[in-house]
Image (cartoon, rainbow, N blue to C red; front, side, top):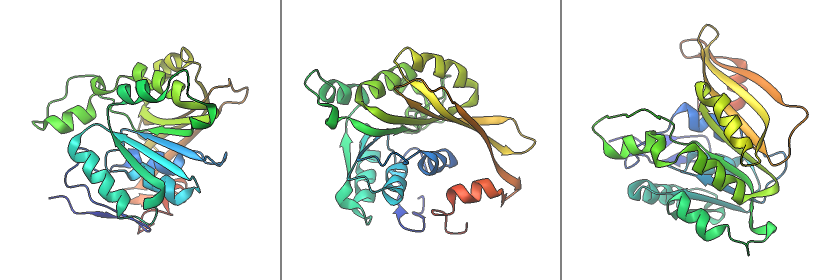
Length: 245
């Protein structure tokens, strides 16, 4: 059984979730911009609820909602929300993203009902992955949430001045950005992540808006100098969350 993961201001139980807490979710939860003071936030495919909880800690957003399809993960996410200091601001829907979009984003939906910040740490293993654990495989494979479905839904649910933030494999970045443009989502900020200075870029943190940006900001983040010796950039990004940072 997986032990609960304790952060500085909240604890995550994860024994019933196929995908455990990993660096990707923590990176996105710490990196996603809240400079525009979002009132409402949506976390697509919440898993344990880690990203929503990080955003609850970082922001004053009144309304933080999550969507999770897997039964066990949905129940555990809800319990993690209820156990937190911010329970009154957090809510998880038990639904697939496609049905959520169909029900929520209609011609009658007002601008003020849309989300100011949408985040997603999506499943992104396009190739067949078999671990023997069906729930884990579903959580890892992008067939359960194809990129075009994610981008289409995000574009419909995002307010006109809102931000959509996600993390994907670096090898998918170029095609993902091209695909996003077909849904009128344009990159504003990109941070490419390496495990160490000599490693290849592994992940891309991407921020999109509905307005093309004339000043795309690109950065690189290196996580470790040596094994378990973290860079200043990674420490600064995550120190409000990890106990030992």
